[in-house]
Image (tube, rainbow, N blue to C red):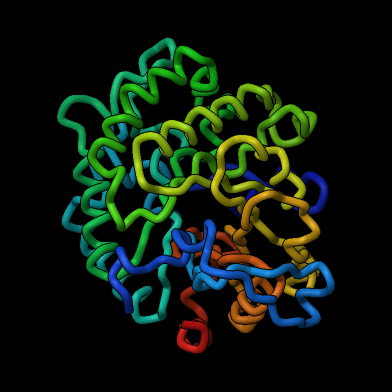
Length: 355
């Protein structure tokens, strides 16, 4: 996730964010895991010798929505008027967005659900979770509305449970990583979520947390003054992934900030890896999948689209380098890297050519 800000570390600048086939037949990711047969990826300069065979499953073309309003698309922020997806304005805006996405050939939408925890789930003072939201809350209504719209437009969702900002001091939620609080989230929020939606074909996979490496101490606290223990984060991811597998038909992934971070999550029960690429070299600098040495498929979870002419170049590079999909950044985020809607003709042409 790219955000504007003034904290410059290494080559990047980050700061706080602001806020065809029916879904059951869209098997781009479901076939991805153990797809029917392997075929060599085409050789191109972008792929280089590092490209590896990719399964014959369809390439997953997607976008990061990633929110209408950061942290309160689903549920109600205490002290604020509910403005989630299920409100009349929310329904109208999301409907219009998804209708346009469908026309452009987009199949998967990555959407932040709990984000930094400001609206949901419901936290107790000690950091434990007591439910999806407060009594009378609107989380289920909002999530149901999002799925209804996605189904109507033959799109699948990849819900992102949390953002790394949950673990920053400002959010005050890092205690969720501890075993007791973690279990309370599973029992009181994740369980009811999966009990209701765990077999919904409009969901293709769950993304446990967005870019957690930014607040993990093996980066020596470069991105936060209070880095969290990477062992606790990996335990959290592993337990969440295991629970999703046991109580749903969906796959599990995690949005790594850099390609070098993906190996951190080996053994965590993920079904495929992803990372977010904003390299200065552009599409030609995208590494081949073989160079990662991973045990599962890889998708490109984010890439910049501000310059519209580069959007198809990124998709070509990802396809030829052995990736199983690519999700553009972004549809609605207001930052210097979002420009999906600036290239409708190029995107529609690419989608039509690569059905």
